[in-house]
Length: 75
Image (cartoon, rainbow, N blue to C red; front, side):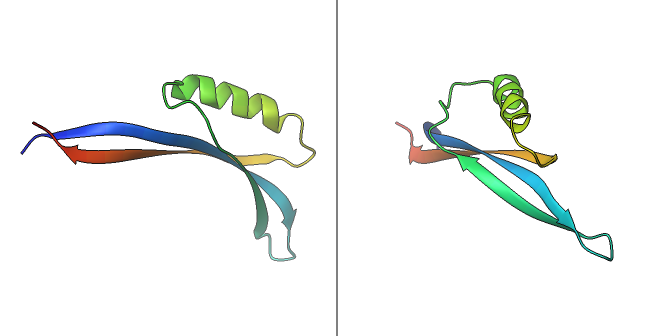
């Protein structure tokens, strides 16, 4: 059974180191940005995320992109 994929939405989450406790464990905070165009390349998302993180006072830990897709049975 063939399956078609329909891109639905994309978002990017930036995780920052908020603080480090006495045992060296990092406490993280995050910012999520929705409505990223699904056609945007990962390289472009990464570049913009790094630029946005540069505006923050906390150090960037990770960049996570989440894409949602609808799977439908093909004809």
